[in-house]
Amino acid sequence: MTKEADATYAVIQAGGLQYRVRPGDQFEVNRVDAAAGAPVVFDQVLLARPSGQIRIGQPVVPGAKVVCEVVSHGRGPKTIAFKYHRREHYKRKVGHRQDLTRLLVKDIQL
Image 1 (cartoon, one colour):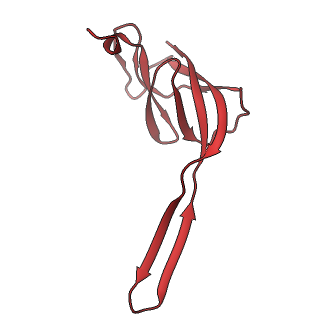
Image 2 (image 1 turned 180 degrees about the vertical axis):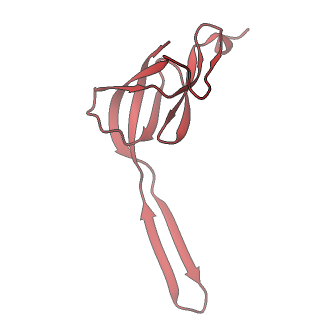
Image 3 (image 1 turned 135 degrees about the horizontal axis):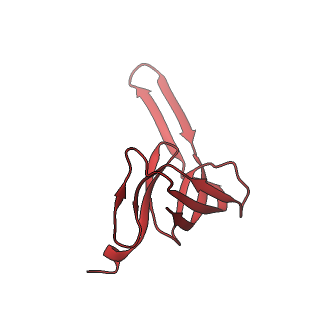
């Protein structure tokens, strides 16, 4: 067995997206209204794997939560939507940057 196979992790749902997180991991989610250094708790835990046993929720694992800390706020890369119709003098260019929050996973609690 590898060290990765013995690791504790959880799959959480935040902002309509799913993330696989382990204690000590940093990941980015859509903007969370919390100051840097503030704790954020996710209770939508879809799957939890503490010390080798897997608990799958239907749809969530009862009583499970993931405690994170806000590291920073920022913005994602710029994406450009460009529409063009040839020979019709039609061009539209729209840019977008998503507001993101970087989180540090402190603990996975069951």
